[in-house]
Length: 293
Image (cartoon, rainbow, N blue to C red; front, side, top):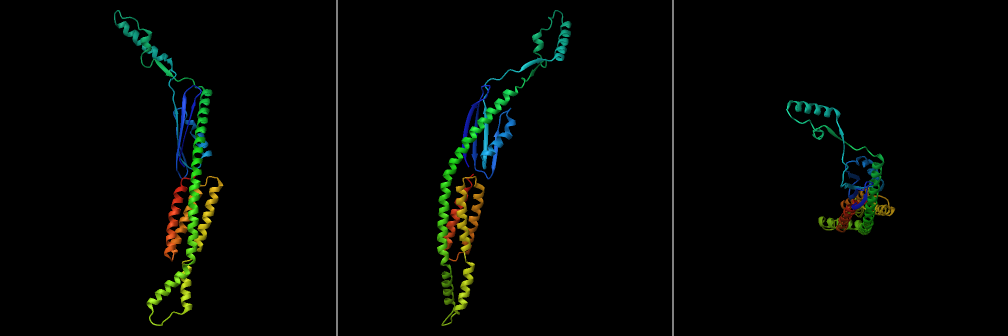
């Protein structure tokens, strides 16, 4: 199911952040997270939170944090590097007549004399930042779920209309199928009349046996009963209000199997046309079922 949601917030240090969630159709649930440096440890908790709300779809979630100012790193002198630099500077000054003694700022500007040390970690501040980000993700997730539910309500009406169409076509096929034995008998009699000449006639019992054999092969009552049962099952799934997308997709495969068999067994042009209409309606149902969570 498709959807989009956005949630904004502020970290405890004042840095604003934004969550953007997008989802498209998918057979299962695939969550892809894009997290800035420092928030990587939230990957698994966020996936678990998404799995508690969503069941299907390819979901991309992007966290953007805007920090306009950065804390300057703390500089720490390297005693050994300072001693080496000072000794070399003094040796060089001693060799040059009238050279001034080395200056401290010049020594400190030399590479390697000062080291930048990362600031001491503030676990309380980091935990508060993670909590704020998780809360923002939950807000965006709720918005995404609400949009998907709205799409689900629209899909429910579409699915109901398609199931009504399939049920109507099934009823028409049942009426058409009831006339198949008579149509088969008329076709056999017409064929025999063209082949036989004069007064030669086929015994009635032989003709009845052939008609019964062909009618048995063309009996589609079982396929029509299954189609009606599938319609009832699909309607029950939709009314359940639960995530039924996978089961509904499986059920559309059963619809298609019965429609195909109905067309293969058809002994009349009218029933063949109805079978083709059923296949088209089932295909539209399958396409819509892919959008259902």
